[in-house]
Image (tube, rainbow, N blue to C red):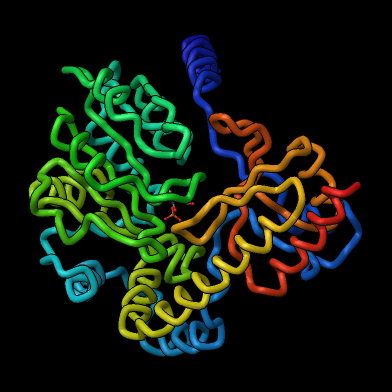
Length: 372
Ligand SMILES: Cc1ncc(COP(=O)(O)O)c(C=O)c1O
């Protein structure tokens, strides 16, 4: 091995040490083994997956697809077909749409395209972590401004960071992990003042009250992120899309990805879900009904505060230490996403709205843990 390689590779390793990476934490299988139960016993409420999607119907579509496609061939015009199908769903023309490998890859693509070393990105905090990881990997700086106490945007705080170096603004609405939508007039103020690209992340848009998509033509610097992972329940297939002005969309489509970036199977499954929209609509409406009941039930537990939600998960804060609650729930086979301190709240968790039977198990377990 050459000395030059060794030196260079060591320097690279040191550089990578400074870049945070995403860790999914314990898996259901790992937890099941740890606590000695079958994996089917684990209540997984940590990833905001949509279990309200009718699995039988979804599997039937997958089987149809298996007969229709030939996996030996490269994808052809799948992306164009999906974009065309999305025009009906979104009410914008196909040149306003770019297909991606779900939301994370879209954030990565946008960051690689538009953020250079020493550029600055701004976002409120707390919010979804992936944009920070992507910006830091580009050598950019990531500045955060705390949300207000009622989880809204601190407009003057955000505006005070905008300058000739700030090139990416990330606003998640509904926000992960607080679960609320930001006031549209606040987003509008920031978008109009920002001297760069604004990502409005609507990964949970279908569960929420409003979307910026109908207004996309007003905002030439906005990219709205959407995904098939949540409302459509295709998290495993990694499919998402951007809605943005045609000039930006063309760049996102053509200048970052390698040829055939998105799996043809995933795209065709997305098309099937759009052709059978009732599967998503029925699931979303059942989930939203369950969400409201779940919030009420969580708030009845002494020492638990559950916040209003406009997505498929709920933020809760407990009076007991987050570490204690988390480990006691894990021992009972229940997985939540632990955050600990968020703004003025000390012991926060993000809880997916699961099927009623799962939610009941969490409520029972939380009652026990909180009264221990
Ligand atoms: C706010 C937000 N944006 C984007 C994503 C990315 O999801 P996906 O890559 O599955 O589309 C997630 C996933 O949890 C999310 O919470």
